Length: 117
Image (cartoon, rainbow, N blue to C red):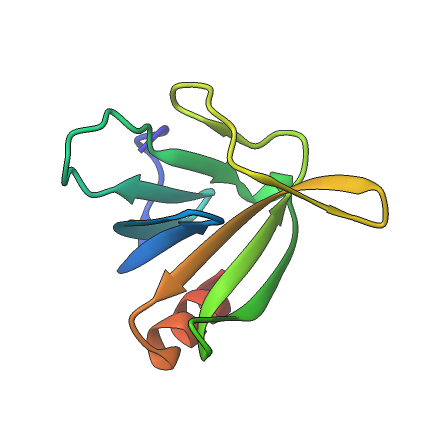
């Protein structure tokens, strides 16, 4: 955690989904931020993703692998990772937005994450 005063509200297994990669790990919601910490499968040195609630532009339920078990979180300018690496960007109507896409095991976990967020 970035701040020791944060309380963990929800911690669930999830996958970070990018166009060519599915990265398993943990999705964590605290009282101040969202975290995604990748599993140490190959020890690639990937940083955990950190996003404050004030940087979230929008959040919506989405599909992954033809199932309703994903969430897309559109991030504003304050999005960062611990090591400074940005996630992929998507372009809609000539506006570039950062998008964090998380896929969960099933719909119930996705809905619990969405409502906690």
